Length: 284
Length: 293
Image (cartoon, rainbow over all chains, first blue to last red; front, top):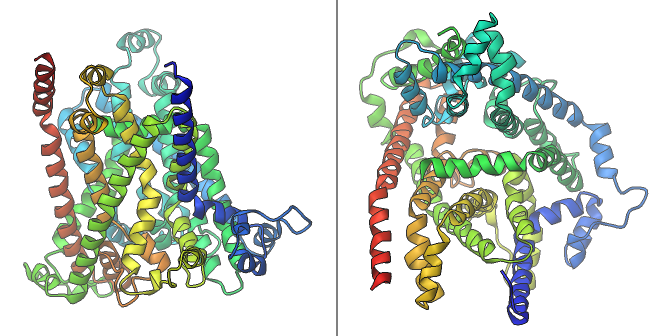
């Protein structure tokens, strides 16, 4: 589109108004990051001026809040825990949901169409309502406060099964026929051919699994009581509840929890945006 | 079938069985600390929860929350999408900027806004600059729920904005070109082309926000503990406390069933409302016919 000089000026004015709007929208985030580098006295003192939104000049104690979190709390350990849980869940959830999705797409078994319908209906059920029963089960199995107890109910996910099925159904059948001639077993074929051929959906499911583990609050708060096993979100809550935690430390903490998510989003923004848009277009 | 096996086992233990048990328990007075004394109580629980003041309060709070957040978040998302779609410069920056809160977790956002909403916090300082007296926000029984709703819609808006942007880009540009030849005003183009084209997406977005809002629990858990004077105590919070704190699994199950029924009804409404594609095409035809004339 070719713009005249006047039109271009109008567009720039519009863009500048939008930039101001976005800054207003983001003021909590800007404030969070800027003040995570300040001692509490400076946070309060700066509150009344524009300096509230500007980080302090870099000096020897620029990272004090972050350092005191790393040395005085177990927060790094909680972040590490969460990364491990997420990694385990990604592997399990790709295998279990992927196999199920493949079965629903390509393998003929009794009531296959009926199962697909049931899986789609299960996507509606809000997990918040059966969390009590999960808690009861895990307690009865003696798995409270264990990693297994935390991971077990989260592996199977009707939404992921459905996602895998939708992708696998369009895989060409002749590859499988050729593989059979080579005496390739179905399970070997799945791991060496199907998954590598479907990198995008594997990435999407992995990213969404990571985000759901990293951001989950309700379920880990029920399962974990021991401070050694806590996830980042629960650890965050227990640290901020401590009277020794300053406001600056709290802001540094929540900045730290957000960093891995920002990395994931910037690496996989394409898959995520496509995933988000497709939820809309699928239903609409 | 062996491929489906692992998923089937887990689905049975963690979805089918819990759902069946929830339904069965909802007709009993199952108390987890003393399971031997369980009786079948018929519809007793269903009658008693609707007489239970706390449940009714939680129900009303949840409905209030939904009423505030749905227009705020859905309307906000649509407005942002329209503005970004119109922009020529810095488009990418705008998309990222308004999406940033979405990537933050509920616990993080709640912790951050506790500081922002604090009596001597940054928001009260900013309001003071424009001459508004300090507000209690989450510490006042009247303001706590709206304050949490504003925060939640701020956090979620970017997600629906992306959905709307996808929808806007899918609209056939020919429709706008036809309207431009007719010298249609911007408002007329919005009303006659954009809105009807986006209608199925709007229904989807508004229902998703509604269902999401009905499940709200983490924000009051982190920020207010359901207070002050239970003004931020929600349905799911009540289910959670009744089940895992008081161990009254029977009662909690009844609440869960009522809640699931609600969500299912909303989903059915969504399916019906988004199904009238023929209706939409008809409107397009009338528009084109009107153009032809």
